[in-house]
Amino acid sequence: MAKKSAIEKNNRRRALSERYDSKRQRLKKIAKDKSISQEERFEAFLKLAKLPRNSSPTRIRNRCMLTGRPRGYTRKLKLSRIALRELASLGQIPGMVKSSW
Figure 1 (tube, rainbow, N blue to C red):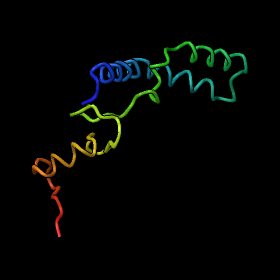
Figure 2 (figure 1 turned 30 degrees about the horizontal axis):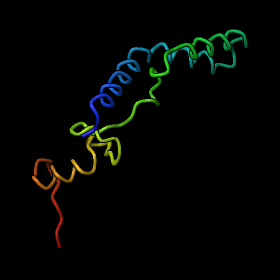
Figure 3 (figure 1 turned 90 degrees about the vertical axis):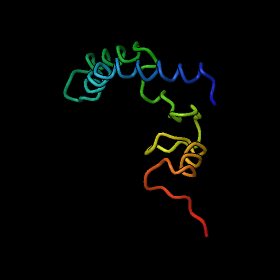
Figure 4 (figure 1 turned 180 degrees about the vertical axis):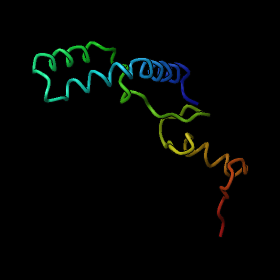
């Protein structure tokens, strides 16, 4: 089980990212548009830099929904490899069967 503080910090980052998403997209679009004057593009870059760092989606860490483990994460099921194996062994994931030969 991961530290509660790390899980909460990641949840705050996720919420901040959602809150600033539209503003960030708008500023990025202005900054990348070559038809706009260079001064306006530079202003957009400055405004983008003034946004909170944790509002960037790249700062969000993928974590297991059950344990909060940051490594060995499966995107499709949002579980770590350990939690996935445990649930698959118990037969709680539809369509997944533990192989044996």
